[in-house]
Image (cartoon, rainbow, N blue to C red; front, side):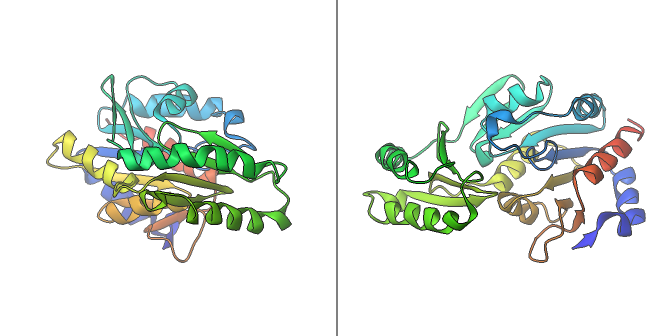
Length: 260
């Protein structure tokens, strides 16, 4: 993985020479600072204006890709004429239509059984709380004392071990969050590839920018495009990295200056 600006001539030439760009952007930690709790997150005003400018470019299709639900993303970003890929690819808003990946009944039943068990568990860990989504349960522990976090994660996995139907679930680790969701073979990467097929363009360059483990699936699926991780990480599948969200904004601002 190379620093984006150290390979800038090659990146710039590729973007300039392609007919159309599919710009896929993670939200928290990429466009918006990571908040103490999800509900406190806001999109900086200048970033929102920048996204609006990008959404109006004839040569660019803009999509926001996140673990947040589609409804939450639409509230946070507030643009109508773009695509939202939420719940790590399980929900999509495009052209005024909201579609959801079909969830196995066994998975949803297992989540229903797990919900009260997790609610009881987090009472023993001050600062921990559960965020409920339509397809998953997210256990946030950013506010838990550092010396209690390992014990909390172990306790969650023990609850899953003893849960009927636990094989129908999988645990995804993010930045100070564990998300328990249906064990279905569908990721952010699959959702991005599906969007590319729907666009039916002969020439299409995907550019994906993200900062978390769940973005690695997209980096791998879009290895033929330009993949950028926020923060250097030697095990990342991204081709390039930028140091922080400031460099993300600098790149997006450059995109708005290009013809089209």
